[in-house]
Length: 84
Length: 120
Image (cartoon, rainbow over all chains, first blue to last red; front, side, top):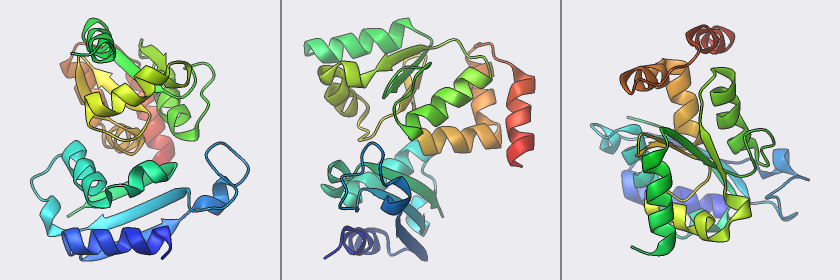
């Protein structure tokens, strides 16, 4: 399974989001630090879920980090756009 | 507390604004660190830059200390503020200005407004 699919599965299961988009942006970082040549290093996530209500920015990010678990240390970069 | 944790604790509590980053404020070595340092530099914040690439203990220790898996990380008055996405969002919404004002940290408000005008 690709890292992108794995991320989508975990986020889907954790938050039942109303919107979820995971973009593997690795190609646009090809050739510089963190890109290992194989891709699957840089990801952008846009997620909207009711569960983020009442949580501040830092808490929202921590919730997503937690749901992604061991994927986070495996990738180089993760850009998050989180809202309700 | 471990030595590393004590060092981090002292650093964030004895300096008003601390940025843990890859590279230095004058020579960032990662796009995300560069973005945050760029904002702080542009709006004239006086801050302490800690290059995690130069210290492996800090590099791994700061992630546990903050319960945050990525670099950069911004601290103001000992409090964790966020990483790159959060700092950019707070810059554009004006929340970052508010936080600096609340904490009595001087910065160039005109420069901050210019960022918002350019990205409005």
